[in-house]
Amino acid sequence: MDETLMQEIRLLNRKNTDCAKWDSLWETFHQEDLLPMWVADMDFKAPQCVRQALHQAVDQGVFGYYQVPDRYYDSILTWEKLRHNNHLEKEWLRNTSGVVSGLFHLVRALTQPGDAIMVQTPVYYPFYRVIGHTGRKAVYQPLLQEKGTYTVDLADFEQRIIDNDVKIFLLCSPHNPVGRVWSREELEGMLACCRRHSVQVVADEIHHDLIMPGHTHIPAASLWEGENKPITFFSASKTFNLAGMKNSVLVLPQKEQREKFDAFEKELGTGLGSTLDFVAVTAALEEGAPWLDAVLAEIQGNYQLMCRALSQFEGVTVSPLEGTYLMWIDLGGMVSRQDLHDFVQNKCAIAPDYGHWFFPENELSDDTHIRLNLAAPRQTIQRAADQITAALKDVRGE
Image 1 (cartoon, rainbow, N blue to C red):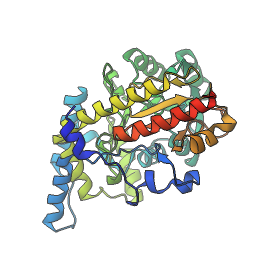
Image 2 (cartoon, helix red, strand yellow; image 1 turned 30 degrees about the horizontal axis):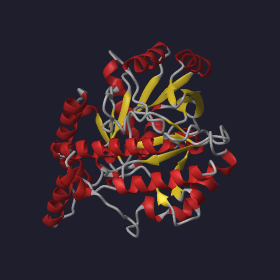
Image 3 (spheres, rainbow, N blue to C red; image 1 turned 120 degrees about the horizontal axis):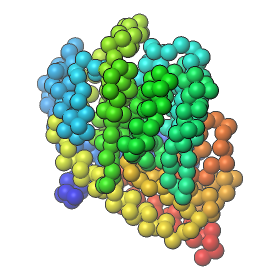
Image 4 (cartoon, rainbow, N blue to C red; image 1 turned 90 degrees about the vertical axis):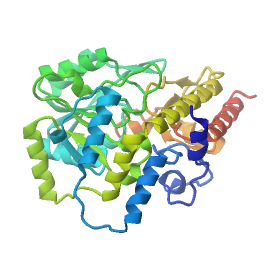
């Protein structure tokens, strides 16, 4: 790890910067004295190459109309090819203001009200809004879980497709919140089911660059031959901490689907995006790899620190972190669902994402997981580990 680089980009305090993670605690938790471990952005400065490119763009002093630079598209194609052996075509690429907003538009463009869309639970909770708020039918396929490790029941997966005439499968890969990087066999199994029943796969691969040692992200579309390739979303926003730039990439390999999506966007009058987001993303993809490698090492160290702290409690189950920077922890062996919020907020003094947020409304309300954001300086993670450990020891009567 480049320790000099990490010292330069670590942010120990983002309070009073209008930061959602640090400055909106009251709205969600009704407390302000909590250590924020929830919203999925990083407490690291963006790469220096990004900041320099933005300064140059601002210093130019003109903020008029611009076209999308070819260099922006080239940076995406090159990054995907070199980092993931993912060979894309420029004509397949579309820009959206985020994966969630892009999903809203894509679902409306390609499906009809009442069409069935399947997700695997637990999952990133905006998926539920995309389905419900567009008037589509939600189909839930629970992941199997044993000792914190989640897998796919392929027989159940296929049966739910058949029973509900599923039109779209929303694949979360790597999976948020459980941290899985799906294996080739798992992906091929799910894709084969979708192929047999003419289900369109839409893969949210926004965490595809955030992979822990020993694991490899496989783009879903790379395993599909022929027509109806999976549609993919990814973004530099998670990779390089650029979420505020409101930029994500939608990959539409099928011409007919591109035409439908473009027609829908034209109806809405959607613009091309901000000049500065193209500048930031291009710089990050062209020069940000060393920054990313250093940050991944920091996240891995943070995960190991937290695992060591929690390993002394038999009633706590930690899901293996294969991808993302989000740690999925089950406290159910020591804390009841009824006491969970009080324990985490008042005993641990932490603001997490609660596990029950990642299930459909009114389902599995007894879930006892929390999701903790590890993309923060070691000092922050050590503080969180100390606070959780002290509270758990108190539960044990120590």
